[in-house]
Length: 431
Ligand code: HAM
Image (tube, rainbow, N blue to C red; front, side, top):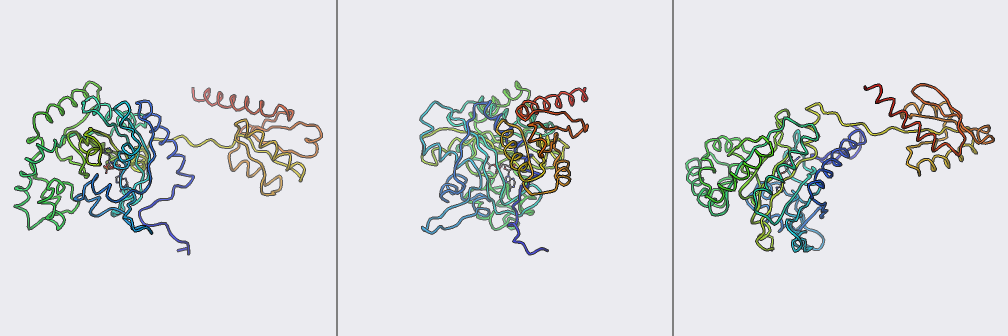
């Protein structure tokens, strides 16, 4: 192996052969969120550790096993954010965003960090697109949030992704369910992992999403929470389902969905891609989180989608992402004076929005044209003494080899028209 310093395990480099796919996806995510009224928020990559202990919950896998926590030079405990919700809500509180018209509707794309065993679709640094709506308990908000996720997946062509829905109740009905779980899991004490044994008293629901195989086996027989939720939670759940049906969003009720973070209440859901087996997104209500983080008693709901996982699912489902534009025009040159003129002209073209390149290496004219071919330039021209003297250039269409003489002062307009004609000819071929 070459003697380079390697990237840390569980991280990825997004090189130009991939970054255009990210940009394409990010544009669709932001555009769709904006069309639902969710405005962008950006929050720090690291936060005070306390935020996640209180927000995400100190008996979750994320907090107990997966956080990148460090002490800074000022002796503060800080954590690279393992998810986007806690930071977004903290920022909403700190910046007084919850004092304006409610619901507050936010979207974000953020790096997240979890120390987990890397595998396909699971990284230590990954990126989440998230949306949060704070300030309403209405089931219409649940339906809007889920519909936003579903519209995004449809726009991307991920039509086979299934929506799994559940309700995990409120603190009142959860207390009753905890007792049922304690009784169930107590009879398997000898087979539970050490972490789950500590969860048994503090938070038995967390045993349900334990990743240890022996615990997973026991979890299969867990009593369903849906048999224990109170009337208010049950009515809310039914109203959410009615709205999803009205919006023609297919879903399956799956009582095994409990989500791995402690802030959830009532509605929870996951988007699962059957081809890759990956959960590409998940979310739910968090009616106690704002208060837990020091705000007033405001309900909220949201979801997060893994950018890497959506891209993987698109690949597995053979969904094409448009290639980035190639160079519109390459300006070759012979000699020093012509090279300076080419630099000037290239800048003029670029200023008017044309993707132009010229020789910045000092190649021979033959090598320059070879390069123009390699970068898939649509048009090319060569500037020499003659072109400078006559103030005109011969523009070659690379696909056909046809050439047209154009005066330098009209070059911008000529290239713009030629590009439109080229696009039109492609549409005609498609028809
Ligand atoms: P989460 O289910 O933990 O929820 O993560 C959301 C999504 O992030 C997952 O569905 C998955 O696509 C992606 N993801 C999670 N861990 C990894 C990983 N190690 N590698 C790659 N992708 C990953 C949350 O984080 C909540 N904050 C979502 C939410 C927002 N709930 C309400 N509002």
